[in-house]
Image (cartoon, rainbow, N blue to C red; front, top):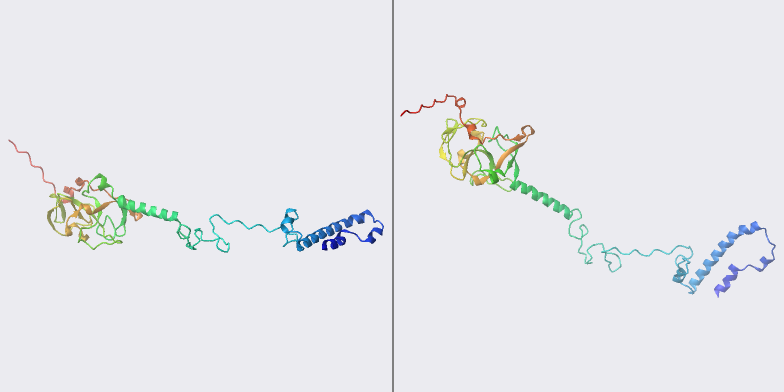
Length: 324
């Protein structure tokens, strides 16, 4: 009934309008937009009335292409967008809100500062793997190939000063040759010699080998005598001021002494060193920079032979061969 009552008001003209004279064409053209606007308002009013009276529905109007909803019929707004689908791997809780734990179990086991794999947010699995590989490679090189060392005392002066740093390699004695006279070696002293080492302080010594197994060693008159031959040692700081009775280096041992003979805790005090205690051979100085370079090789025993100039006395002439 409301539709029939409203239709004459919007779509029909009053009776008096038909009796009026015809106006010029330009006035009719100017009034055309107003009529179109009035017609549009009438159509929207009819649609609202139909929705209120239950004669139509929003779904039916949307199917007809009108684009008018019950909530926005008066304003002519488009229908609201459908809700976005949930992301893959998200779970909805009882209220329909996606869960943020990322585990998919819904039991709240995931923590706010970590990922689903159990790692903290500031630490990734790839970082841990990289650090572990770097540490393993570093310790592998230190254990099998070479390691850096620093000098804490003056026992090897002038070859090494306090604070000097060196590299000790570990391949020569493992694959090439046995420890030899003239080598500078780093080693762990025999049990009972020096202080006990710890994890941070492994109590490593550095000395020079002066004799190997089977050699006889003695110190007399300020000279090192090996196998009854006085040695000329240009690398020492000063001649020794002590005496050492003759002894024989046992198998599997070497005799080590510091280049600063009068300020060295070495084999002349605690005896020969087991070869198994040797860690490596000092081969390179890298600090300070002005000492950068390898150590001089003194393994050629003939270079250490005492000459007439070194001994300060003329060598005795050789005896002539006996006749008959």
